[in-house]
Amino acid sequence: MSHAWGYSAENGPEKWVTKLPHRRWVPASPPSTIVPADASYDAGLKPLCLKYDAKDCIDILNNGHSFQVTFTDDTDRVYRLKQFHFHWGESPAGCFVNNRVTGAFCPSVSQLHLVHWNTKYPSFGEAASKSDGLAVVGLPSSFIHASRPPTTTPPCSLFSCRFPSQGTQTTFPGFDPTTLLPGCLDYWTYDGSLTTPPLLESVTWIVCKETISVSPAQMASFRALQFSGAGEAACCMVDNYRPPQPLKGRAVKASFQ
Ligand code: SG4
Ligand code: ZN
Image (cartoon, rainbow, N blue to C red; front, side):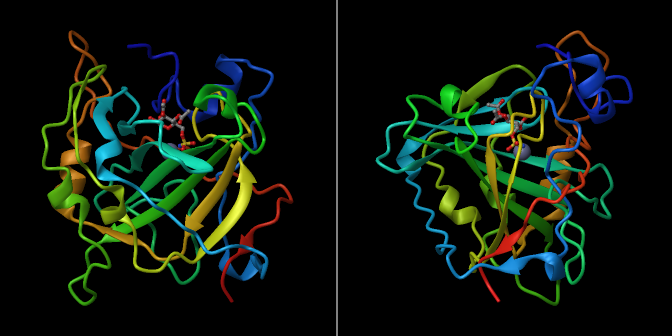
């Protein structure tokens, strides 16, 4: 699998723009730091309505940048779920993964991204290049706190499958992403881009206020995944996130007061 880009000093976020020139690669595009006090309440924002079906879940793929769980594309919704994946840090103490939320919220140890595409376009591929083509729901996660019961079933029990090795996929039927969602779907939203090359500016980011929980054991299983492929020096898949970027004047709206 190609290592044209990655997360190391040689091919990481700092180098994406210089090493892999592309006219759409905007250096300072979101994900961004969300400061709750700077977000303005927008009464016109609709409640987030996420409906998923376990029978649409197909497989789990290790693409060398993350692992992702893929869904069939034939559900009857305006925005269809294409796949979900995680980004996570190396440090067990936590890190600031994409869409860092400051203030009252602790740094997240990982972030779940549910990637949806707008079916007014004929395919995911076409939608990915349109400004209103993708909607990614970002769910920051924190560790399970002894003092605070998990708000959702910890992904721990859900990803007990054997992860596929780099560049391979394996069937993963019957997984219902609804089980990953927090109880409250209040969110912040802003226009942004994919967090990986080619950084297409086609994403409506929807970041939920309530964090989900992930167990230390589950994080350990994520961190045991490999960036490296067969025959390459072992390299653990960690810090596979783009650091927060400045908002550059983009408005962040909140669905809640
Ligand atoms: C991860 O690398 C996913 O595995 C990619 O999925 C995804 O790219 C990429 O992150 C960027 O997505 O929500 N973080 S993000 O902005 O969904 C796309 C695939 O390569 C295009 C399919
Ligand atoms: Zn992502």
